[in-house]
Image 1 (cartoon, one colour):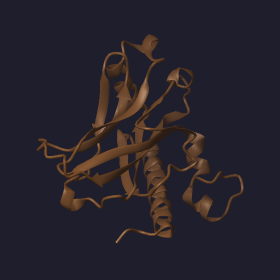
Image 2 (cartoon, helix red, strand yellow):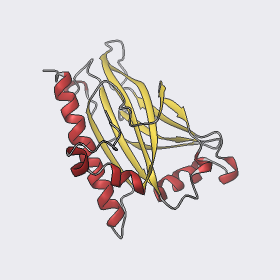
Image 3 (cartoon, rainbow, N blue to C red):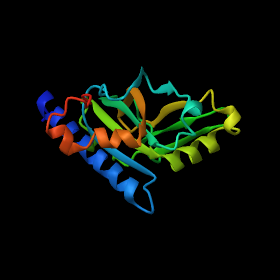
Image 4 (cartoon, rainbow, N blue to C red):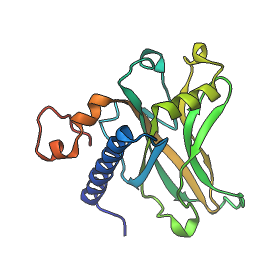
Length: 203
């Protein structure tokens, strides 16, 4: 059965809390995580993601924040849906959704670890992907996708899809938000549960 709207909001609240707690661990670890990926049922991108776009790509410009010592990474998201497509009879070696950065030189993508076989997918149910790239991982990806820091003005955050047999995957929206150290303090799950009025809603 498809989850209700209330259930989907509950899933997102739990997933968002997990992500924030993982980011707090990331900040305290001597070996920071390169990325965090979470997929849950949800139809819309939360307002917390300050930059949003319809479709599978959105332009980003990191030039103004890359030297900010408080920057810890970038939180990205997309919504996607799988639909029946009996005309898609191609047997791909692998089906996937990949999310990453496209520059003037090439695109560098991270494959999302979910199974997209027809028997395992709930069709016509929107899902939300949350992915966090740590600062060092982000810099590495951008460096590989461009000709250097003089070439970062045309970067896009984008998704690419290898279609599963019998299905059509559509990326509907995407977005991102730069994450700074002060964000983790404001988004402390304990603070949010106490109804701190200074914390902006993330849903």
